[in-house]
Image (cartoon, rainbow, N blue to C red; front, top):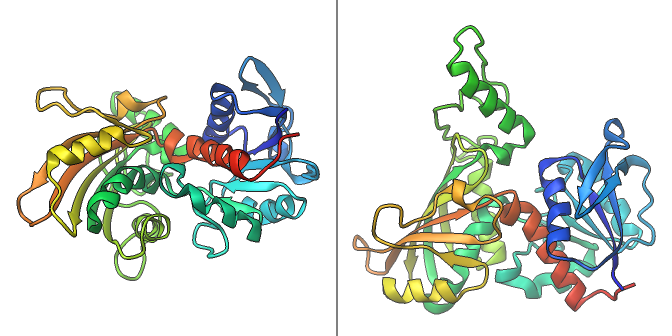
Length: 340
């Protein structure tokens, strides 16, 4: 006995990962539907050892389906998520559309799984921004021990966070560096991304921050604790997959770095790799395809009374998007829905 599950946006990077992870984690499925736009109708997509053909999102009837994982962007979600929810299918949405809606729970299962029960207000659950998801997994166990006052985070975000176009642009520009006659000007990004870093993700706001930075502030408060102060600088880097974060944490009370390391080692979803030697830390290329949020470089911040610095790395297509959505579905099934 299992569930009838829909993956909307099945031909995109995150949609494909959702299908992969549902199969890898042996999520109980009686029937699967892979949805895409009409132009991708009939595309064959892998699901475990099976192949499924995409169906048209525009004409799909969600009646009788249990869970829909959405990876189609805010504009399409605005049209189709309410239709699915009204048909009785619980939507787990990866876009930013519902994240700040007070009637929609924003969930990272290792952090605030109990918020799942709030889904009944709209039959929709929001998946957080990729950079927020991995950070709050790291912050939660430390916050429980010493209460966090303030977080200063700088992110180093891979181009896959900007979708297939971001990956293609880095690939094409990298090749063109070695072929001067084949110059590839920026299209997806505001400046050249190959062999460069860009301190700009999403649109600029009136206060000089970007929307990506605002998301990290607002989402951390909603998921973890509204009293935590967060300031972020979000940077796009020439990495294909894997987001990295340098996080400085100020606590209400003193937390020793050794205790912090022990707490993180025992925390769900976290893998600590922290040796003070060459290579004794994790880089984004090493986290690709993995479920864990990796923590390295844990150390005291001597410039403030109660400070800790750490380095946080995770596969943004997995924990930052697809894995977190599947984990939400698992919690939903365990606590709220009946099989079959």
